[in-house]
Length: 147
Image (tube, rainbow, N blue to C red):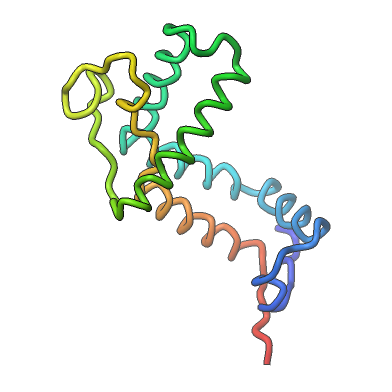
């Protein structure tokens, strides 16, 4: 394995330089770091029902004619994820609606309204992703505590 990237705790807390960021990306890519992070996020999104809900929302966008291109759909999806996540924070809700991946939220069929699709990023996805990211960064970074 390559030599760990050394930085001070101040450097780790501040915005990283483009060179430092590239070094970290390269170190993560040269091992299994990126694949482990992706696998964790994929597993948690699948387990929480987020991926099923996302797929249903995208299908609804195309079937309804609201979107006709990939770029339009991606813009709408990103906007909805941000909106639903911010809405949940504003409402103080830390849980998202339960989906069964077939008939919609809590077994109720979905109609054409996009509000029926909750695309809030589930807390378990964020928690597991952050935990895995920390583990993988510790493998490639050596943070020296400033005195």
